[in-house]
Amino acid sequence: MRSEKAMVTSPATIANFGPGFDSFGLCLDSPVDRISVRRAAKGRVVLRVTGKYEVPSVPEENTASYAAMRLVELCDDGGLGFTMTVRKGMKPGSGIGSSAASSVGGALAMAALLGVKDKGMILEAAAMGEELISGVRHYDNVAAALHGGFTAVVDAEARKIIKIKPPELQVVVLMPDISVKTRDARAILPKKVAIDDAVRNLSLASGMVHAMMRRDVRAIGSYLEDRLSVPYRKKLVPGFDAVRESGLEAGALGVSLAGSGPAIFALAERDAGRIKLAMTRALSSATGLESKSFVTKPGGGARVESIS
Image (cartoon, rainbow, N blue to C red):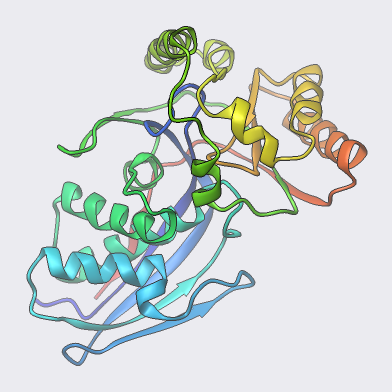
């Protein structure tokens, strides 16, 4: 029986997780985008955006509808028309994969409508949505949002993704009241890095995968160091060093940038509330910036909530 409508939820993520630049991602349990799609007349695409966060309402400029259109093309479905509603649950430009959540949600919703089960195809359409925003078809955020848990993109061209179920842990996320565009965060990175930094990141990344497989929360926190992106991108996030130091002093196992920033995250086994408060106060004291913060945990990925 042909499906006429579908609704999905798609979660926030932390990309570039620790030393895994453009490779590692961690899916979060919350917040989520909610995306619904319904069949419409052939070639007709209508987009409605709700929620308190402002995102493009033109279908060709919104990552959710754009990814859905790309999936239709990949399936060679003859110009299927649709109406889509996107309820944004996270602020764009915050560093927790807002565009990826919409991209995955749009692609997965369309896949449900078309009966597509190939996650590689869904991932590719979602990555096209990311490319719309960042100019680069990178897979770390979308892989984590689609598959859930901890993911490593080991071969983007072959869409080969490793997924590991992370241990129980608390994730504290602090979002300064500024925005960082992914394009700008990529532009600030050097074209070449020192061999010592490359080797250090490779060693840390190996340790991170092993720690995830062992489900060792403390070891995971200890491997959050990065020398390829954080030293450069933290310049776009006022107060980063002060916030990191305060989080560690309050008991965090590790603190780093989420994605390209400005969000800063901390990992903990306990005392997440105390860590969140310490980081919030440190940011305010160091910069005077307002912020929002929340505590969450690793999530299971995007899912189809209903289809009919």
